[in-house]
Length: 284
Ligand SMILES: NC(=O)c1ccc[n+]([C@@H]2O[C@H](COP(=O)([O-])OP(=O)(O)OC[C@H]3O[C@@H](n4cnc5c(N)ncnc54)[C@H](OP(=O)(O)O)[C@@H]3O)[C@@H](O)[C@H]2O)c1
Image 1 (cartoon, rainbow, N blue to C red):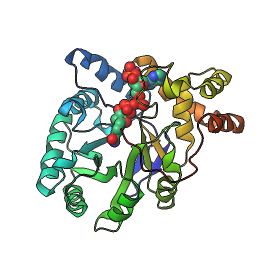
Image 2: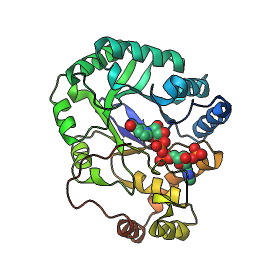
Image 3: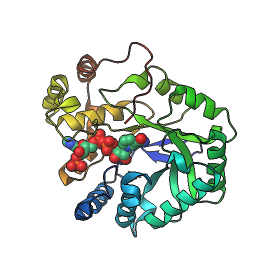
């Protein structure tokens, strides 16, 4: 799997699997574990989770899916803002490690900015890193002003990523956040690449320009949406899929990405215009 370098020199895969909404319904657990395992078998080795998802339930699903194959996996999890003080981060990380039955997280993120001073969270992240409990750390849902503030604090130079809402319908970050991260070689993680949308006829996936590009390549609109993000320089993409067909399609988007032509990209720009001015960061 193609990867990007984090500021620490570690490598992050460009395509991963999301887990939001997993671990909530016990009757879905078997399918969720199977989906993540299928992704791993297909070489999609990054798994993105959070203590918030299913209030720990998603991390337990991840733990089951990666049992016996931790070495193959690039594991991302996130701490709640209300747990982001010095002691809270340490305790939350240890709980996440237990739920995922592992002794380290590859990339640990502050899920969004809350009331705890950033310097305290960064200090706690640095300590976890020194303890070997996490390998890298970063943030999520940070707009450029938050990134500038965080980057100037002790430990801020180690911020490895900003995970943000980015998809064909939500291109606001292209105005300044994405270029800023690119200049600093901080990979950006694009969440909700399909707009979280289970309805393939509505929203982003129902767009006629997207459908036309998909038809030309004999693929689905979702695959084009994921491939378009994979084409963006310095971007990691983490679609969530439980249905095996979706897992396979998303993996195949890796091969589609280099095949998108200038005509395809122009048609996608026509269907989903790039931002013409600064907009506040969109979030889910
Ligand atoms: N940092 C944050 O604040 C934040 C916020 C939101 C999300 N995230 C992360 O980003 C991940 C992805 O975002 P998301 O879960 O919001 O939404 P998403 O990946 O944009 O969309 C997920 C939905 O799309 C469906 N789907 C997946 N692959 C498909 C395909 N090839 N064709 C058609 N439909 C497909 C899934 O169905 P099935 O599951 O039924 O297959 C599911 O209903 C999350 O799971 C989470 O890990 C982070």
